[in-house]
Length: 187
Image (cartoon, rainbow, N blue to C red; front, side, top):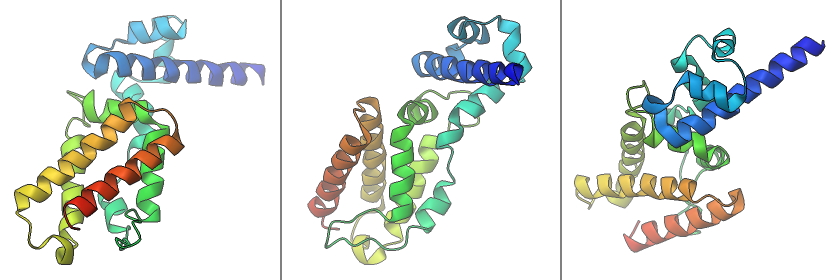
């Protein structure tokens, strides 16, 4: 039983070290040796837990890997008059992104040369599609304008993640930004 506890402790140490290494250096610059050094273990031991850097990267990003299309489609309608801009599914997803803000930043800004390198663009497209699905709200807007709003919204999420203080702070700021965007542009 003691060996299993130690194995889980080592695995968690590797994950924590990998999170910090990927956050500071991005996928391309991170090395398994530097992750092992951070975890305080021999480099070869990592391979007992993870096949390669890509598998470790996948595990680090697991908490923020969402099916964006499902989240957006499952959102239903928002109540714009009462300033409740997010459905419960969207809010739960965003809260999870904020709880795992470093992982979110890694996925969006530090995943060059991985299967996640287009994730930022994919999320912008999903937000844009979600906005366009509310034809009654944005039918008068140029498609480029809607794209800019979607891109700016994701940039706002990332800025909140980069400056993260607490989940409550993040959600309060997000609500202000959503209200400003939607009231300011007439949604």
